[in-house]
Image (cartoon, rainbow, N blue to C red):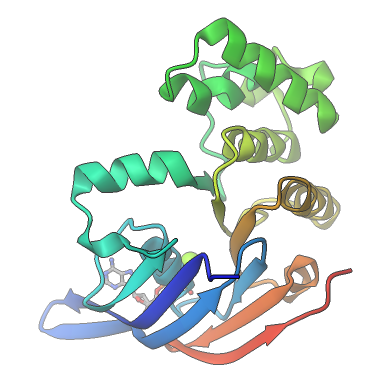
Length: 231
Ligand code: ADP
Ligand code: MG
């Protein structure tokens, strides 16, 4: 099997006044399809910077990221936007749902961006939400749902187009312990059901329990990289 993500000697510097912050310092690794990879490390270790690089949201200072063999930093902004829409999904710490749309409409949105008619997109969204126990919240607006329910809608929205890779930056950062468990089980359940690759950034050691691979960063460098047996 070929790696789905290949990171080659990645470096990211940010100029700050007269100084330069080295956020990533020579990072290299490969991710295989359907790994659930946790990027772990203390605050400021470079996790979000790495996620932004993997998702093509920022250009590297040097080195490169290949996704399915494509060096994404060489794509034009337009091609990158198409690439992202086609292959990548995102789950956000603050859910990022549209306030004026219902749970079903929020979940349907990526299908509509791909050109599906609203009626069919919403029908598909409803059946996906029903499989995760949100059938009774389809017509609810974000402000009428708990944080955990909103994040479950965010996860359904990320998976509905079945992107090859789903990125999540601190997806449970705003949730309590019990809800965190529910949300992580949902991410892992979808990942396994649809055989998708997950890149999950966290500073919480407990979340590593859901991963099959744990890459630990400190000061922009990989200090540990281990695979676990699937549970
Ligand atoms: P983490 O997500 O692990 O908390 P980040 O990737 O956000 O860490 O940040 C890594 C380092 O890079 C930190 O020292 C941070 O201050 C710095 N950094 C991140 N983004 C920027 C930026 N846009 N400009 C300047 N420095 C940044
Ligand atoms: Mg961060």
